[in-house]
Image 1 (tube, helix red, strand yellow):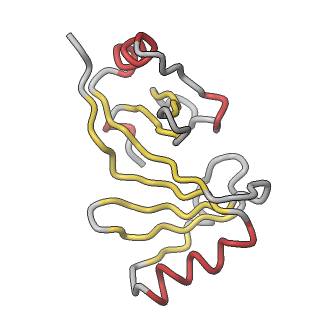
Image 2 (cartoon, helix red, strand yellow):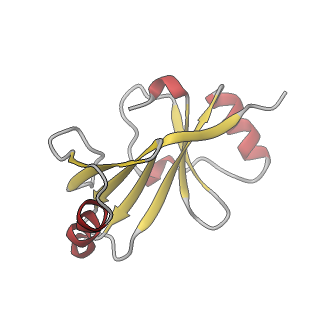
Image 3 (cartoon, helix red, strand yellow):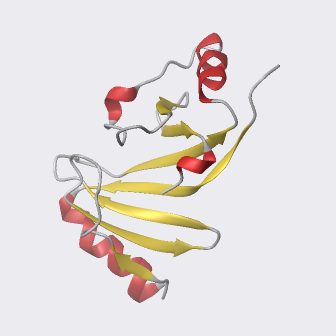
Length: 129
């Protein structure tokens, strides 16, 4: 039996320092979307500043990562069984890449990349943040 996968509620756009303010202003001032400064919350190691954008049914996280030279998009996948999903992905040539970013302590999840290098976190829905 194969694990089930479905899109999660979070998308992260990792942005270089030089692009962060303009990108945040684009969503807030140009598009008029609800933007919340999340810098006071616990953010991942290496993320210097963060803001959340209500992006329809999902949250778009704008993360300032000072050592990045270009923007990246990171996606979230929910699964019903992380171990089974990891085995399934490995069998299809997609290895876990947990070195991409530290996971919160106790989170049952793994980072993977799709064939064009877009990072995805694969996790249980109840670990949602």
